[in-house]
Length: 157
Image (cartoon, rainbow, N blue to C red; front, side):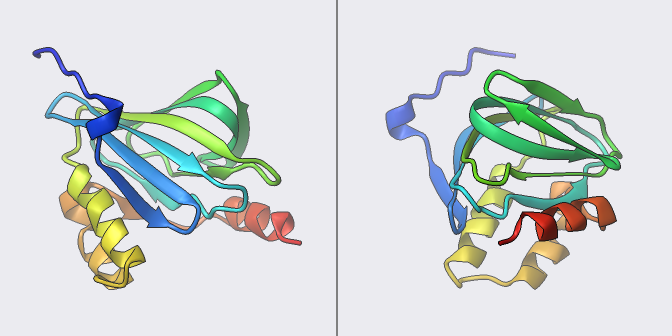
C-alpha cells in the first residue's frame, strides 16, 4: 500500500439524506474511509450487512446509536466499534444528539460510487430501487431488525 493523503479542502462531500453529509476520503482495494456528519434526528443508515468487509466506527463528536446483531450500543465521543462481515448493523445519531463519525472498511469496498448513488437518490436523480439493485455490486445487503425499528419508534416525539 502506498501513502494516502486527502486534504479537507478538496475532499468530495455527498449529501445522502436530510441532515446527513458523507465526506469521501479513500477507496482502495485495501481500505475505504469516509466521515459522516449527522444532524439531530437524521435517519442514519438502515439495517444492513456486508459479506466481505469489517466496518469500523469511531465517533469523533456527539453520540451515535449503532445496532450490532440484536444489540444497540450508544457510543460517545472517542468510542469505537467494529462490525465483522455478515453481522447486521445500522447507525444513527442518538435521540437528541448530533454525531460525527469516522467510518472505515477493510478490505476496501469500492464504495464511493454507492455514496454518490445515495446522493443522486436524495437529489431526485435516482430511485430507492436503484439502491436495492446495487446491493451485490457494493456488498450492501438490507435486512430487518425489530430491535432497531423499536428504537426508531421510541425515539420519535
